[in-house]
Length: 212
Image (cartoon, rainbow, N blue to C red; front, top):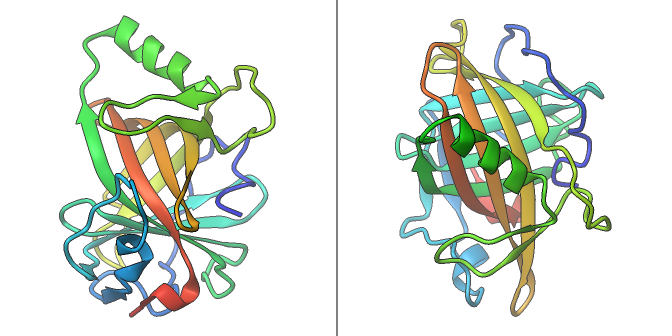
C-alpha cells in the first residue's frame, strides 16, 4: 500500500487522543528484527541498533478518511503506520525511515528548484543510487508533489506541540536478494519554525519484523 491514498490532502488534523498502533505510542520501546535490513545488499539504510525509544508521535488524516501514524525517536528515526481506523487497530502498512540529509534553502529560487525536483519521475541523491517515483509509478510525466499537515505530540493526553505543513514525494528502488528501499523527499514548514528540505531513506517492514 505505502500511502497510495495520499493525494489531494491539505487539512490540519483535529486534536484527538493518540492511537496505540500494535502497542506503540509515546514512551514505549519498539524492538526491531535487524535482519530486515542487514540481509539486503547495496542499501543506504543503516541502523546500528535494534530498538527505538518513542519520544514523539505524529498523526496525519488523509482525504479518504484514513490515517498516517508516525512514531519518532530523539535522533529522528521514524516508524510509520497507515490505517483506515483512527485508533490504528487495522494498520497494515509499516515503514521505518531514517534521516539522510536536512538543509535550509538558500532562498526562494532554491525552494522552487526543490519542488520542481519532486515533480520528476526520478530522483538522484548524492551517495545513493537512482530512485524511481513510487507514486504515479507508471507515468513519467511531471506530477505535483503531495501536500500534508502533520500534528506532532510529545505527550499522549496533551495538545499537539506543533503543526507541520509538508510537501513531499515518495521514491523507491529494488534491492537484492528481495526487498525495496524508499526515499522520501520533503519540504517542511512548521508553523512558527524554519522551512527545510529533508531527505529520508527507509524500508517497508512486515508485522513480524517489529514489536512493542
